[in-house]
Length: 91
Image 1 (cartoon, one colour):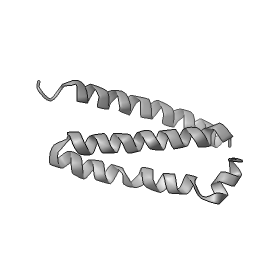
Image 2: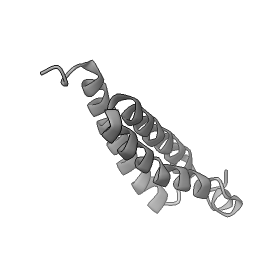
Image 3: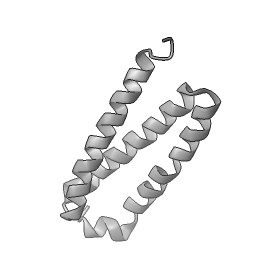
Image 4: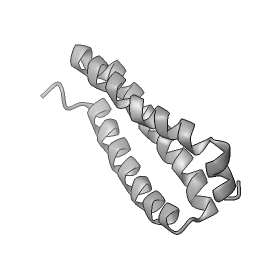
């Protein structure tokens, strides 16, 4: 029971929030909306935050999984910031 404390609740809330943002971003990006690019940056930021929280709250396994889970958001962030993608979304 000690494992189910407030950090677990916050982690679950952050995961749910990240999922909702990602769904909205997906529809916006498919429609090539400029606001979706900005919201995608917010979504990537939430994913990065979730990975960092996992690193600091999960022991050895959390460090391993958290570190691995940071790879894709970093790659997506780099991709979103390339000049071609910014030009497509007019930002």
